Amino acid sequence: MGGMDQLLKQARASFENGDHKWVAEVLRHAVFADPSCEEARLLQADAFEQLAWRAESGLGATYTCREPKNSDTVHCRSNQ
Image 1 (cartoon, rainbow, N blue to C red):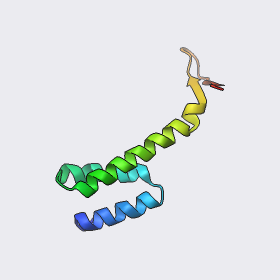
Image 2 (tube, rainbow, N blue to C red):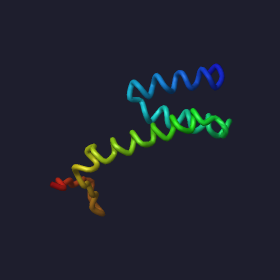
Image 3 (cartoon, rainbow, N blue to C red):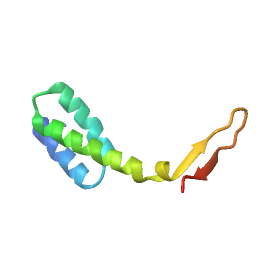
C-alpha cells in the first residue's frame, strides 16, 4: 500500500467517506505490524466506535429475527 504514511492517508480518507469497516480491518494489519503507531491505533478505535453506533441504530436494533428449527422461514418482529 506504499508504507504506513500512505496507508494512514488512505484510511483517513475512507473513514471520512464512511467506510469504517474497511478502515478497522486494514488498520488491524497496520497495528499488528507496528503496535507503536499511535495514529493507527486511534483511528482504528474511532472506526470501531462508528461501527458500534451503526449497529445500535440499524435494523438489528429495530427488528429481532429468529429462524425456527425445521423451517426455511425467518420470522421478524419489531422491538417497538
